[in-house]
Image (cartoon, rainbow, N blue to C red; front, side, top):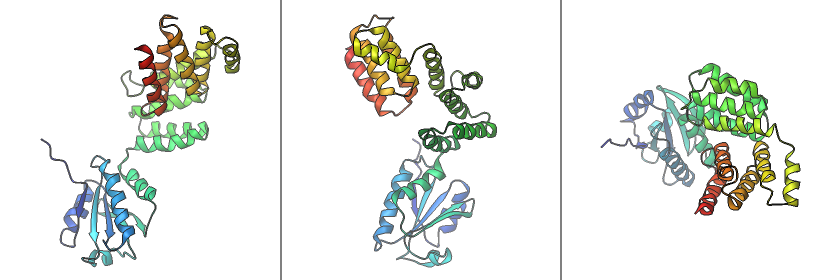
Length: 285
């Protein structure tokens, strides 16, 4: 059975060279100066330990008890507690002085442990949420140029191009992605829905048709596709659910299949997708 590497180690002047300097050549080491008598430093230790517990051994926390020995604190010019020094490749790469909000420590751990693809994805979420597709496209184009073999960048690039209605460019990027690449289904499905939506009328047209006759399955399906294309995912799922509940045989179970396609657009970890998967399962059984 493989031994699990520790996420933290207590450091003194005697083992600093081995546990921090030398270890930092393998992975980043976050050195925390703390003392039991200083509550903010105890809180900082708890936050860092929790953040690193989910970092899969990509960084190490080295704790220095200043109440026991102040030698290292003096050497690294610590002015107050808590204090953080980040050591990478034997050199100090970053530092935090004094009490910080929990998200500052969490952000530090993320910066040190996330892959380049994960960091870009986190940044993209904010940019896309603001509707700034031009910036998102520029970020991903640069990422693809720097790491042409990184399939996850290409997946995100294709997906954002579709959301920006640049379908021809998206098709070119999709063609360069291996069929078995993780999450390739997301931009592929988004492209198919965009192409289908282009043949339909306005979303409000189908909503009006359903208001007049909620059993109109043709209007219900068109409404679901138009809503998914517009990013109105809850409406899209609810409308497709209505098809599933009314007629499983309509267009060969298109209600269920449409819900599955929308789940692909929402991606992993979507609470909305989880909720509707449960409802879909209950409706089918």
